[in-house]
Image 1 (cartoon, chains in turn brown, cyan):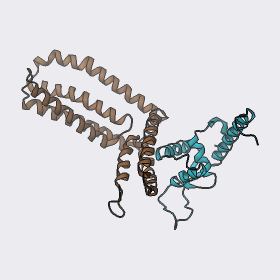
Image 2: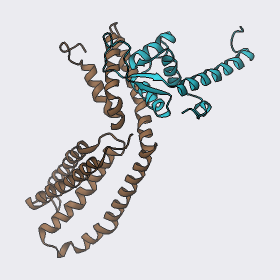
Image 3: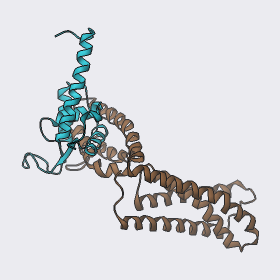
Image 4: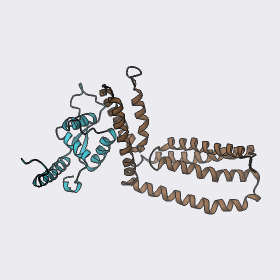
Amino acid sequence: MRRASKGSRTLSERVYAALLVAYPAGFRREYGREMRRLFADRRREAARPLALPRLWCETLADLLKTAPVEHLDSLTKGEGMKRTLRTVAVAVTAYAFTLLVVAPLFARNVGTMPGFVSNLLDALISTGLVFNFVYLVLTLPRWLEGPRAVRAALVITTAVVGLLITLMMMSGGPHARVNLLIIVAQILALLVWFTLHLWWVLRRRAAGPPAAA
Amino acid sequence: MAGRDPEELLPLSPAAFHVLLALAEGERHGYAIIKDVESRTDGRVRMGPGTLYGAVKRMLDEGLIEESDERPDAALDDERRRYYRLTGFGRRVAAAEAERLSGLVASARARNLLPGV
């Protein structure tokens, strides 16, 4: 935990900076720098033996106690509450519509569709469900915001879809042979959801700053 | 904030009251606040960054404290630090909370829970 070099941050400071992701993005944006500075000040005074483990115990307890409070605060206070309710309402409606209307319609008509079109629609539905769920999980508690959240959702969804395709290929069942068209359709679907979210996020950013958390 | 009743915000959280006490003597940055709290409580209260800045955020929202643009001594201090100071309303809320706690202590004394004066 010693200083790596003069003027650089110690390992403890870097770890604490990374742990700040536990707080809502708005809170981090407003106080993250001050919190890192405060931790660095604390770390510098922890020269005695066992002072550093004690500092870490106190800091982790502080983080576990206060991060949920800040999340609750950002979800329920003022604009935060309105935004949470709006987002949850949109998500529930979209999921209900997809699962109760779009998916049954697709299943009924899939036999009459050209191969690649059915692959693409199938991919749009399945990756859409995963992508939007991941995006919701990342953004609702304000862990991530903006293009960063969209990029993270793309990475996680790609990993999930890749894992599912691999498992399917390894299972040896009736769908074991995953052809190239299915993979191309999945990639296109991922790009569609990524582009839609990125467009939406950039459009909102251009419209004005986000509501204070 | 002039028209607001300080009693509306009582009781204060211990963290908030500690911060108000620290700022009663003048403006301070975060580290100076927690050092003040530590020295006043003989090291029994050690506020972490999340506790301090959570309290600071809520007190800024309530108008109990405000951020200061002035620096006590730019040559001695790091001007990138954020300093906070009490507002007039914050001082009245701190006084009301002190009064409330004082009343509680008096009740405890009356019931022989504390050594008499």
